[in-house]
Amino acid sequence: MLTYSAITKVKDRERAEGLGVALEKLNPPPMGVGVFGLEDGSGEWEVGAYFHDKPDEISILLLENAFGTDGFAISEIPETDWVAKVKRELNPVEAGRFFVFGKHDLKKLPKDRVGLRIEASMAFGTGHHGTTKGCLLALDKLVARGKKIDEVIDIGGMISISSLNHIIYGILIAAFLLLEPRGIAGIWMRVKTYFKTWPFSY
Image 1 (tube, rainbow, N blue to C red):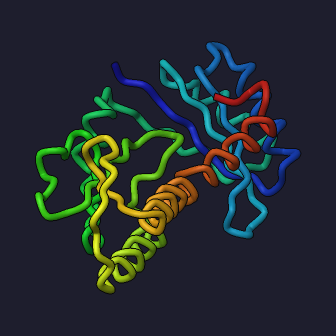
Image 2 (image 1 turned 135 degrees about the horizontal axis):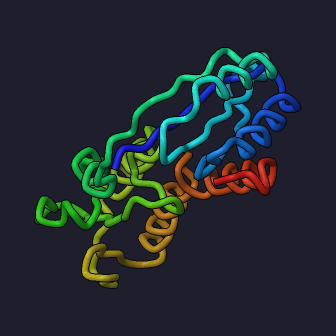
């Protein structure tokens, strides 16, 4: 089913929030409205709405003039299997001995690599951020300095860890994956945005 989005920018928070409220009052109303502060230092705010049917052009034009927006960009959104799309575009990350992948790439895991299976979601990173890959490469160099692995703990059949030092390495890997922008840091940003836009958030 074809749906529509209408997105614009305004210069300040007060006008952005007012525009969000006005969008909610359109007839027929949108399915969701979002108001977000841009993090590029411009001080501008983005306002977007998501519609089942094409929004009324006259109503949108009136809102543009009333709130001094840059003009709404109205786009058609074709029906898409978003899960399949993400899986096609989310390739494994290789960093030294580490191989970060999702369930859909399980068969690609090389036998000589340490597999880190991370499912893409709103709560966890996927290892694609540069800082994550850099940390994994650094850990790979530390482990490669000749430490003998004589005791192994098998966690989920995917990661082999030995001794307290190796357990610490594993915890560090998990921490970096969680703290990258799509991890806990991203969760905190979305929580703050939600309460700024409540009750008009998605």
